[in-house]
Image 1 (cartoon, helix red, strand yellow):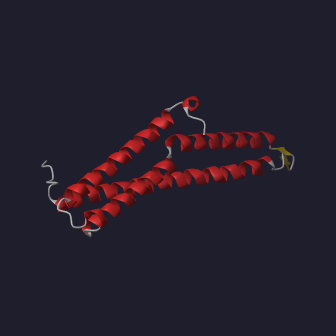
Image 2: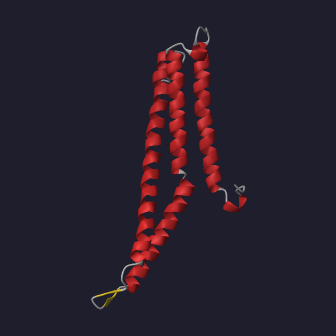
Image 3: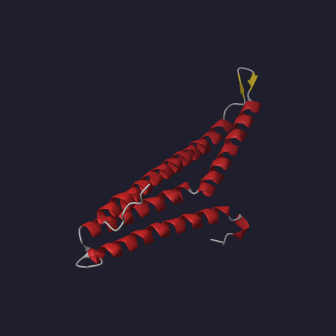
Length: 161
């Protein structure tokens, strides 16, 4: 398969910038959904625990205390697992990071297309644009790597906040 000729601005815009914009938009939306669903489940389960604990222990002579205890234990464990996964997998952090990267790439694209800002009246506007875009993408990769390394680091090694 032939590599696109990135020396051509239109090809670079379509094959690199637009592809990256699409990637970051999709990735941000995916992480947002995961974050919102997980956080919503945590809120709902957190509200259910005290409600279930306060249910009558006996209804019509049937002892429900074992079922109430079992249900609250399962819900409490689910809450702990979801909170742990939310903190470990960093859905919220990734969502915001991808969204910010998408917006920065859009801004650079529009400045370049409009020959505005740092791309105004410059012979080397295209090469500067490519350098800026590649720097943004590289920076996002580094942020992602740092988030993953932070999540993997045992909590005793994390600095006090």
